[in-house]
Image 1 (cartoon, helix red, strand yellow):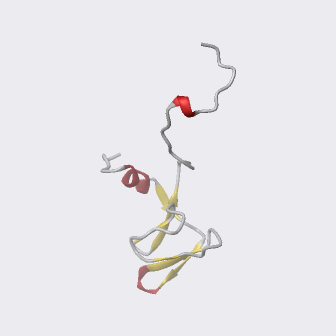
Image 2: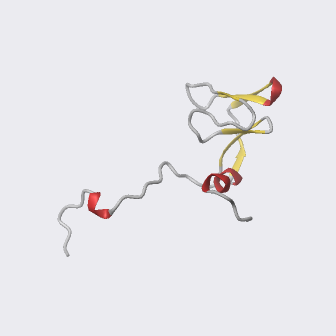
Image 3: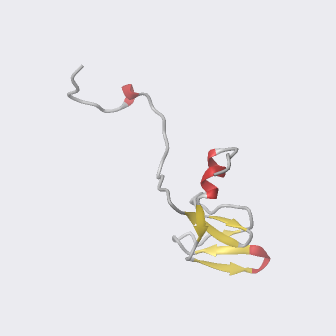
Amino acid sequence: MAEAGSFRDLLSQLTAEGVLYERLPDRRVRCFACGHRCLIPEGREGVCKVRFNRAGELRVPRGYVASALQLDPVEKKPFFHVLP
């Protein structure tokens, strides 16, 4: 796989064409995956920031599942009864 400039670029390569959408004029799409029914212009993302429009086609994640990414020090975590 080619080296990506950012994490977002890398994830955008790991996508497939979506099923729950409608193609509209001017390369826009309407996503039906949730209740927002996003109208997504070309090159933009929906409200979820997961589905996006590339060349008039709705692209969705494929082969990875990331619900959240967060870096916190272990001291903030609620660990109880841990032996030293």
